[in-house]
Length: 414
Image (cartoon, rainbow, N blue to C red; front, side, top):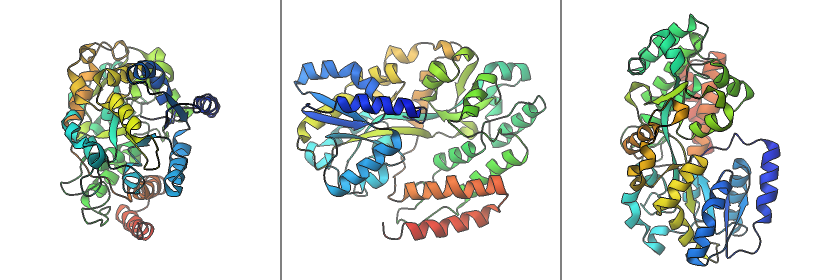
């Protein structure tokens, strides 16, 4: 799930409203928008069924994780159930502040109900489960069908490999249309989806950095080729320019998660309904673009009740489908994928049965074990080294070597 779409004013309003709901309940749920919209839908039924009253406290994405870090470190202040974003899951699982759900509740027996890659992300190095996936972000390519039709391009041909994707960009450029908002998204896709067996995103099984490997060189090279040929719009995600780009057809494709559909349809570009469709990512890759987990802090005094809520939100297919319908949170529970909802055409995507595409991607993503230093490495690689290459023309291997030195320094004591 992604909430960078929430404005400051709405964050304040949501936090104030949600804080008011965090007072007298049996247990408290700590998360970030738009979880509150989903909770409002299913909590009445949950409370009626179990007799457990649930209050919730919502903070914006960054503040929520900062607060949770402090809560776990000090041993107080956390809710009974807490949400953790996939980009933060590694360090939180290894923090020592969460309940071992395998040991206390036998969570491993539910493994087959979940996408394997997401289930693996909630485990520690010893294979114990500390976090249950609640939603996924299967990675897809959104594309403007009207632009593809005008250019006479078949989407399957355009995503055969990265060369074909770049060739599409060169064709579009002649008509003053960009291939994608930012070349950085392509680098991220390659880094996240081509992890060799036995490696994590940024570290090997022994905790050694792998950011100078061929995978990162390729990711940076493809992104740089796109940038050097003037094929991306230099537009940062979640900016006003990004929103306008979707509305005006400034760029023809966007690599993202299934959740982007809800944003496009509901507020970013509702007037473009019928002009979009989704496909697999280019080059035959399958990957995740977001996702969230639920955990129980050890400090909770109501752990059994908290576990009941987690089960209701993840193992119960009806709740998973409710969240899918309410906030476009793609189900982590794969037993839902046969529901008739997945066969319904989506008007915004020109009648495409896109949920089938999302489900197929989710089933094909390979498990990747998160590492304690992933959040540090991600910042150094995607927000620093990659930008130096794309914006400043820095040599790729030099940028990656420098990034590796920084990663080793900053993760030395983790």
